[in-house]
Length: 346
Image 1 (cartoon, one colour):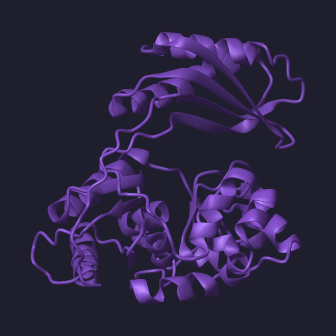
Image 2 (spheres, one colour):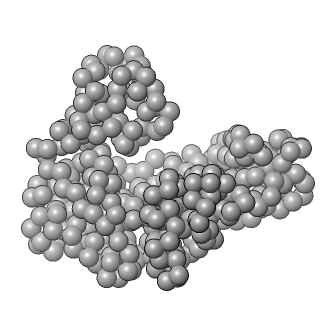
């Protein structure tokens, strides 16, 4: 989806259309959860501190997130996906992989299926989506960002390696800012630069990540679309309007975070063994503390109790805490439901 949270807000409030909008945070503090394309022209991005966003875009309008609304829209979109294929692997509320090899409606090509899905999304939700169509997940992901917003990009097998070679490695899924800077220092800026490095060299510099990089630079990715993908972790976090120092208040806020996280755990039907506390101090330094058990955690009370114990061990924090997060992980592996499909024209 294109700027999903912000686009939903602009759809529902005509006064926001055509204006720079940030979902989440406030002019004083917090973190931007999503930014409209009008705001992105000023360099406003998700996960950016609100104070930085305001400096870049003084006219930025902050809107409180409505996650229930976003979730409802996401369900509408996934229902559209499943009319075309059962092989849908959600990555988040606004993004998913689809294996459309079966061509359930006889549309004739993967491009035609993508166009039909995008049209259905616009008709049903009033929102736009961008699609990447290709022969593997890695390139489809890259292609989905190529012509945003409201775009379509098709990369057939014969053009995959050349497409990857032309892109900056910073766009590769899994290559974050730190890794991208490290690559640049090693003389790797594009996919072509990466492809020129032998496997032994990649292993020397990137360890276990080398195999993925070696294949990606050649347009190779053999991961199947997993229709029943289970998240590695489920959690929630909250940024506060003011830095909090009082123990009782912090424990109360942690309980709210635990409620939000546990609702997602129950919705997913998950159980896990590890609870992780995320804590961001007044100066934006962030720490995590985790505790694992031998048996799965199956109730909110235990989940919160472990989180509270982890928080207690970090107190007092005299200069305050601006964010608390709580996550359940060690959820167990997803089943391997890989499917061999016949080829479909692009």
